[in-house]
Length: 93
Image (cartoon, rainbow, N blue to C red; front, side, top):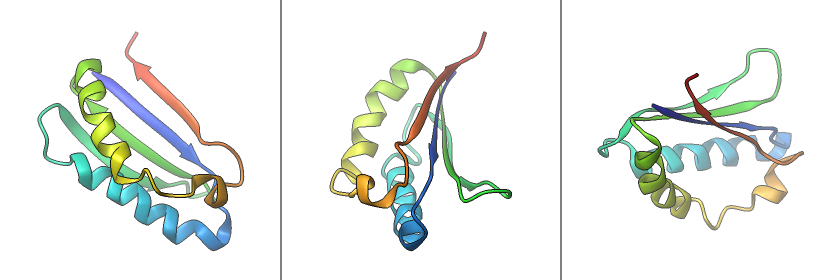
């Protein structure tokens, strides 16, 4: 199993656009072989948004990630985010 977790800090005026972008990212790979689950989440205690994608393997991630990224390649994250995206590529230990 391989998990991609991205923590976003949206600027308030771009929160909706960022959520839509995260949904497009997920929609681009939802239902494809190798994706176990994908979610757009919000932290109950802050303005943070979290993208959580669970893949069957790192190979599945490497195959599907370019498809998902292409769906949001034109999005101006540098304008939408107050700080850089904090990304995690997680494997079980």
